[in-house]
Image 1 (cartoon, rainbow, N blue to C red):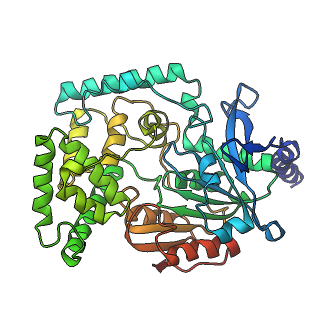
Image 2: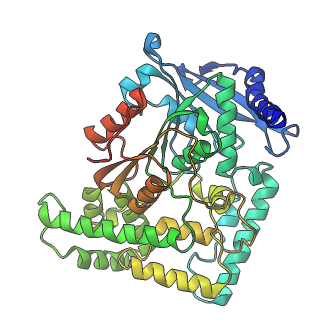
Image 3: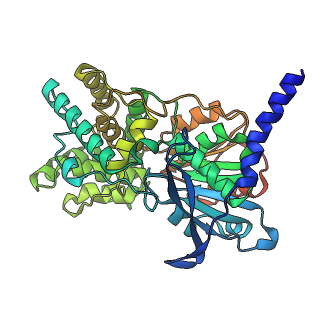
Amino acid sequence: MRTLLVTALAASLLVVAPEAEAATIAWQPCPDQPAAECGTVSVPLDWSDPRGPRTDLAVSRVRATDPARRIGVVFVDAGGPGGSAAEFARAPYLSADVRARFDVVGFDQLGTNNSSAIRCSDELMARNPGDDPADEAAFAALAAHNVAVRDDCRARHPVFDHVDTARSARDLEAVRKALGEKRISFYGISYGTLLGQQYAELFGSRVRAMVLDGVIDHSAELPRLLLDRARAVEEAFGVFVAWCADNATCALHGQDVRAAWEHALVKADEIGWGRENLIVSAYYDLRGGDWDGLASLIADVGGARLAFEPNYDSLRYAVVCQDFALRFADFAEYRASREAELRASPTLRGTFLGHQEAATCIGFTDRPANPPHRLDVDQAPPLLVLTSRYDVATPYRWAQTVHRQAKGSHLVTFDGPGHGVYHANACTRTAADSYLLATAPARDVTC
């Protein structure tokens, strides 16, 4: 019994000691926003070698506007991967009520923005032989291309092999310690929800409250990672078609919307823009819940536009391919997966985002550094899962799965389209705010 007590005490000291040794952050006014504070936190390049080389993370903080009623700190992350959480913290995204009671903090994850940003060779990436190989030779060519880009990018960036999301969760803990906060609240969107989940798994006792908005399901393996997204795209397009039939404001009202879509694909090719770009733009309209924009896109292909994620292509190699088991054994496995994807989503020819991620990892044979697994947050308080019913980036099924795996969590569903729905309506915002401000048990609710 004495041995057990000593062991337990030693373990507790290992947890407590770093708190006393935590470095403070040398805050300075942010150059582009003097009312906010900017600084850096030094962390190990490799957490398995804490005394080895170190690197700096860029951090921002906006102090609570009502300091007398300050609750604590809320970390924010807008996802990507590749979005700047440091910049996001400086934006007035969360409600005035939340910003009054919390210091809002964000840090650029390693490999992004002002934390040793990874930028793979644009010249090499432009040589992509095609993301939908039609035969063995094309599959081999894409595999060789991906490996060449990865190896070149790794040689350019020493941080390349140290940027998976489990690692970022340890970085978040380091920033918490540097702030001197005993517990944190967290609000994450999209890929930022994976950071939140993994922090809650590793450091659940340090979580006060956590809102996950547009939820990544880290237990999703191939082929479900593709099929869930493909089915979500097809379902969302079907809801858009029904909306168009019921709303005179739709640019395609009174028309056969599916026929108009097929005509638009042909026209995009005819005018030299290409159906691939039309599909990408349509996907982003669906993801943003912009049904008016999607209708106008189909009605006027010549006026189409292409949305994109900042530097997302580079970070697929370094982050997504290490967070998920996107590994195809051979062309036959790829072809079977692609055919299933097309059957699930014939209208938009599959799932743009899911397919691009999987195609980027073709040629990778190593085990991912942060392999998929079921969520285990038993040491954390109940989480709030916020989602839309017709999210094409992080499907509704993923939110349901995370809700089931995170025992005691609460599911708030926006009954509409979009990705990241904190601001979808008063219902979603109030549910999230009430939970963050009071940590009061929320009811599963549809808004």
